[in-house]
Length: 287
Ligand code: MN
Image (cartoon, rainbow, N blue to C red; front, side):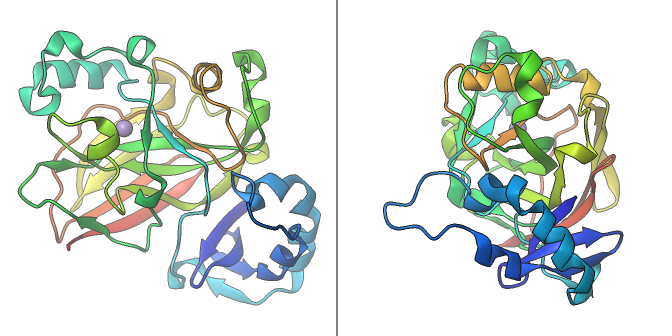
């Protein structure tokens, strides 16, 4: 199942190049009172809503996917976790380029040593919302990554069980200002976490370990890799993350970017794709 949020927070069931408006299904979410539980209520309820979504989709109004305004497919994650250096060639690239490490390069470590960073939830945007450059005087790079959306509460999950906790996958862009500050600051500007084009539920993508991913900027290929090159694969990332954080429905795990990162500027057009998920186009603009 492929699910998107579009236009004015409509829920869409994506089939080929069309979107069925199944927003009425959201009326079945449990009514809640303040303080609301953390996590994404729709992702938490998704297993029980799938039948209703399928039924509603049969008679729902239809639009072309290319004609809707795509938002992030996850509205309210409790956190966005990032894997800093999780492809060996990107580790090599970062340690060899002073513009990328900005510190003693001996401090640049593979994910085993460095663990995760968090991105502010306010940085999340959908593909139809442009990346808005906040500090044009600073180098700002694209990073394309497989994004994992957690489906249910997870604590200390072993890798062998980890994929059972995944709701689905989407493309993630971890837009990053280069420089000496903490990652959680440099990567948390509004619109610097792009998620899209829609959520592909885990039943459609049983094995995330062999997916081609790539991104081009203005038609020039920048990054191209396959998730089999990840230093820590998706199950190991979930095991690692859930040994520190409690993962909640809707939480997003950005699995790391391959080599080839480079600067983006207002006016640029990025096109990202991941095999078996889809592709999305994002514009970069000035503030
Ligand atoms: Mn990244």
